[in-house]
Length: 494
Image 1 (tube, rainbow, N blue to C red):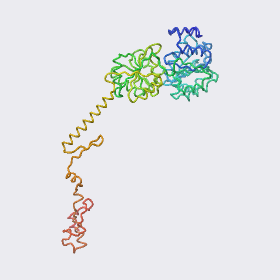
Image 2 (cartoon, rainbow, N blue to C red):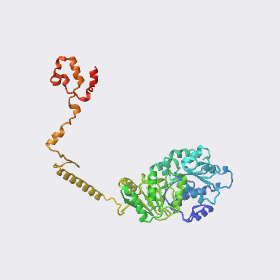
Image 3 (cartoon, rainbow, N blue to C red):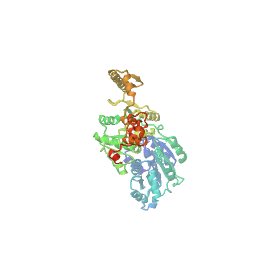
Image 4 (cartoon, helix red, strand yellow):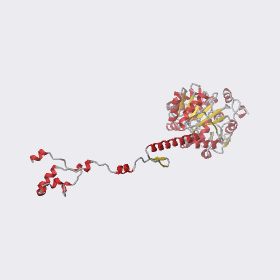
C-alpha cells in the first residue's frame, strides 16, 4: 500500500515525498484511515516505527478545511492539542507537524518549560491551530490567560505511559476539563500498562485498538548484548568497548543526573568527546548537546531517561546502558533509539550482580533471553574470587600460628578468629594485681595534725602519735584528700 491510497491530500502527499517516504509503516497503514474517520484510537507499536507520522498526517488532513491566511488571531484558534512528556519529544513532534504541513496554511507552535515564556506567549497570542505542549507549561499559559482550549477538536496523548509515570495525570485531568466534551481522542505509546488501559477506558470513547506488534516487544533489528562486570570496572569497560569497537556515535544511559555528569567528565579524561543531557540542564544546553551529537561533532551523548523518548537520530548504531533502568519498560524505550527506520542497531548493557533483579525483569517483559558476552579482563570470576579469599584466610591463620609458636603459646581457634595467650602462670598472677599508686597507698602525716592533737590531748603526745600505735591520727589517708602542710613560719607566728 502507498500513501496515495490512504486518503491524504495532495499538499500532504507532496510533503511526504519531500521527506523521501513512499510507503506507510504498519502502524501508519492502520491508524491513518481510522483517524480520518473520526474514531478514537489507541495505538501501540515499537519505537521507531513511525507513530508520530501515524497521527500527524491524518490530523493535518482533518484540520485542512480550517486552513486560512487571515492575519487575525481569532481566525486561528487551537483546534488540535498534542501533549507530550518531555521537551525533546515536544520539539520532535513539532518538527514533524511543520515538515508534513509546510504546504498548508495552518499555524503551529510548541511550548515547554525550561525557557523564557515571553516568546511563547507572543506565538500563542498570534493564533495557532496546532499546539504541541508539555502539560506543566500549558497550564502556565492557561493561568496567564494567553490561550483557551474551547475550540479543541482533537486531543493527542503521545507517550501516554511516560506521562503517567512522571505524575502528569492531575495536570492532564485539569486540562481535559477545559476542552469540549465532543472531540476526537488519540493515545499513542510503545508500551501499554494496566494503568494506561484504565486511563484509556475513561478518556477514549469506543476506541479502535491498534497493536502492530506484541505489547512491550522490541525490534528484531536490535541485537542485545550483556556484559557482566563489577561496578568499579564499568567505566573502564565502557572506555574499552568504545575504543575497541571504534564507536563513532553512541548514546549512553545513566540512572541519575549526577551520575551522567560524572561519567561525562571521566570520558573526557580518556579523550572521548561527549556531552550530557538531563533534567538539570537548561533547554539551550540540551538542544545544543543534541544538535552536536546528531551532526557528529561529539562521539558520545550521556543521558538520563529524559532522552529515552522522542530522540530520533538517523542511523544511531549503538545504545549502551551504563546502568539498567529502574523500570523495565524504560529499557524498551531506551533501546528504541537504535534500530529505527529499517536500520540495524545494538543495545549493550553493563550489568553488575546488584542489577540481576532488573535484568530478569527486562527479560520477562520483552520475553527475550539477553545474550551474555565476555570481555577479557573485565568478567568477574566468582570461583577465583572465592579461592583468593580462602587462600588469604589460610595465610592469615598460618601466620598467626607461627607467631604463637615463637612465643611459646598454643593457638586456640574460635570460629574465624584465633586468640593467643602468651603469658605463664606467674605473669598471669602478677598481671592480675592492681597497680600500686603511692598517692593513694602511702600515709600522709601532717605537722598541723600533730599540733592539733597536742592541744586536744597533751597527755597522749608523749610519742604515741609518732609511734602510730592505736592512734586515730595515724590512720592511712589518701594524700589527695587531706589538707596541705602548714607553713612552719606561719605556725611560729601563731
